[in-house]
Length: 308
Image 1 (cartoon, rainbow, N blue to C red):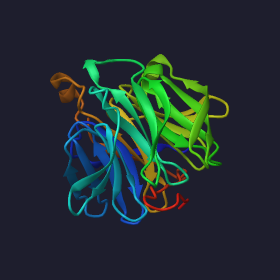
Image 2 (image 1 turned 90 degrees about the vertical axis):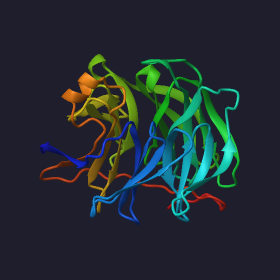
Image 3 (image 1 turned 60 degrees about the vertical axis):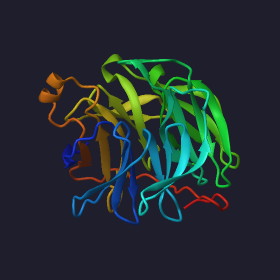
Image 4 (image 1 turned 135 degrees about the horizontal axis):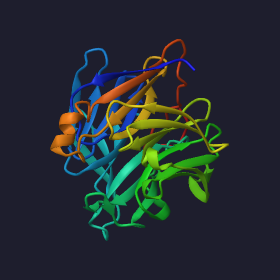
């Protein structure tokens, strides 16, 4: 295997950088800073970072087919107008769980927005279990709860044939697969794919490549691992320059670059001194070969769900 190269592409420190999404049309990397309550986008040509500050912690963002973004913030779904820097609320959820918030989410292959919730930390490193759920936001504004009694609903993606839904519940330290019914969006029949080893710590965000392999960010372990979901084997480990690695996505001109987010929150002042790269965004590429690219889907709001 060719040697892996890692470089910092955005040195501006994120408190909790998460949910990177490549906007092919604009040529931008879009991501969130959960704890700063921001949606951000980075222009790789000018290196400019723009941001919109929201009124709650924002767990995830995705692209809309008609332009703009769909977001999950606090415990609601909304549509973000970048020009107006405003969010139109589509649906309020989990009003009976004031300590909950949305976490990771993505658009499914049919153009629906799928996102999960979690309970906030009750103390550092402690979360109440079985408080999270996964919801699907459909193009007609309806919302369906697909799964519940989750710990920290986190990384998610779909198999290349769209029949399997991959999901991480961080508190289980595992990656699971489910049957996915594309016409309805129903999620069913959970089974274990991979249980993280002690040195790999807690799984966070995740993406899939064109070979159907999963890339999992290991927060507090300073690495990304590549998994074969069919065999349950770890294929590759990429060690990163900072410990709190949160998520990843493919992007760039030909989707040959793996963008990786990280966090600075959760580290003590002493640890921050030792970890100057905490909170930066990185790019991974391999010399002499091209990393596999992923498929990007758009949220289709107000029209029949469709593939892009």
